[in-house]
Image (cartoon, rainbow, N blue to C red):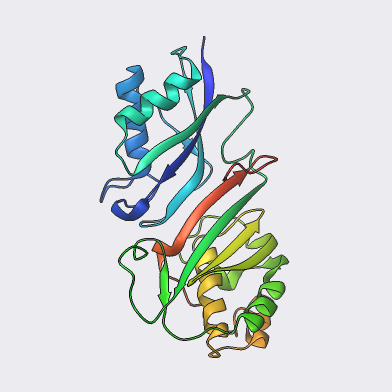
Length: 251
């Protein structure tokens, strides 16, 4: 008899090549699977809700696995955390039905990108934000956020090697929140292309700096072949907050 277990995993991605197994370095998936082997004695493959790139973080990455070990849910959570490095933690574990899939059952995702608006560098924020020295026009950035919201062809915000079969995505909302020197860009959507959020944020920053117009952004959505390329924000400011299966759990 087997069980399907869903995990919510948080991590500081600074030291890793990303979520997915890679031949050129240590990944989050590798660490989780090694911890599962140490805890259960089984060679277990975990299936995630998606990928995050090198130096990208997560508060709510979701993955699932099938096991023949009948352990209490608290044992999966606490046991795995005993074997995981300090920069990776299982936040929750739960049993899920056989038809649940971390990726294909998801209905949406919430990403947060953190900008540090400060002329001086911050040792405490350097791994989790992108420092912007010049002032940003938040009003025009909010106008640009409204343009990005809705169903669009996001080909202009898709990097090489993206495996998604279609560039059409539905962005439910983009919000800007100021907390002292930090500016949070929260993006909620049905799904995302490779580097899409980072390219959206990079372009929003260019607009906020006055280097691009909102009209240029509209052109990028309507005619990407003739529009300027998107600017890709650096990875360390990005965090996967929540994968939605009906209600986000990224408190």
